[in-house]
Amino acid sequence: MSINSALLAGVSGLVANSSALAAISDNIANVNTVAYKRNQVNFSNVVTAQSVKGKYSAGGVQGVTRQFVSTQGLIQSSGSATDLAISGDGFFVVSNKGAGLTASDPRSFTRQGSFSVDPAGYLRNDSGLFLQGWPVQSDGTFISNPSDLSAMNSINVKNLGAAVSPTSTIGLTANLDKVDTVQPEPIDINIVDAAGGRHTLRATFTRTATVNNWTMAIATVPAADSTMTPAATAIPVTFNTDGTINQVNSAAPGAFSINVGWAAALGLPAQDIAIDFSKVTQYDEPTAVGSISQNGAGAGNVVAIEVDEDGIVSAIYDNSQIRKIAKVGIATFPNADGLAQASGNSYRPTLQAGEMVIKQAGTGGAGQISPSSLEASTVDLSAEFTGLIQTQKAYSACSKIITTADQMLDELINIKR
Image (cartoon, rainbow, N blue to C red):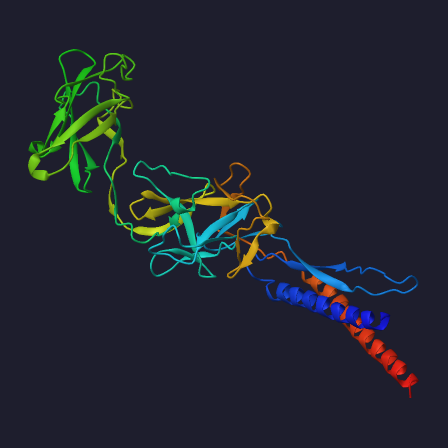
């Protein structure tokens, strides 16, 4: 009967609008959730076959949920260096496990980049999901596989140990008095060995009998601590008549290199050090040292963590050293709106979403990582409140259908009385 179909249509309207109300409620509740993507229930009419001419049977309505995962939220600056946002397409790869992660453990995908360092040293977001990345190799590179999630691991920034950087370059700026024949005082330079120990390297300039010609001797203090290769006892240093260094007759002043072979008792590996003395001059001025620069650094501890736009996570030490830890990969899908929702504002892959590919940030269509930033929710409160009013009215109207159909059935039953 048409009246029964009207009742069923009213019921389907109540169910569909209830789903719409649930979606709107979820959106409003998550208006401040980082990287939340709004959902919307669209309505589709159900048409039934009209078997009797002149009579109409209502089919009702059904709700179809649509999620706007691919919609970009506003990127906002935050006060934490480990907060991350993706400007463009893609998702962070995360897991619900930090230590002991295996290939069989599930991974999910999220844009909620509110990561912080947990007590165990892992980068973990507010939903308790651990950020995955490619670990750094011994040569400072990263092995990135576009389809192998097991190549990534939970990023830990705590158990790194101290950082040491042995001295490999020295720069010297000085003037040698052209007139004064008194032997200049040696120049002491502090260097750092491979174990973080500090030593003194002494450079001694000695005038020769030939005008504008000097020799430079380099030795550690005490000299018995090392041997130099090549022998650094009479390095030629020649000046032009205008006081500048003669690049041809001097021993490669801009790229002179020695190998420091430490004494066996010290238990240290040999150390190559490039010495740039191309800024040494010979003017008619008192001998003086202008500046000494060297790139070594003793043992230091981690004081901060930073992430750059390429997704490289690095530890900053109090000795000014920076050590790479891992590189964050960006997972992309042909149809991100087809992903299945999971707990913690994350998503699971589906056939509808298409084949996942993990890319380096900013390459192959993957978004760029924005450090110290968070992506805002895509919920528009004004639109949601408008939808809330419309849904309420539609629900009331559907309930009126049921009331009216019930009254009509009562009238039909009363005919017999």
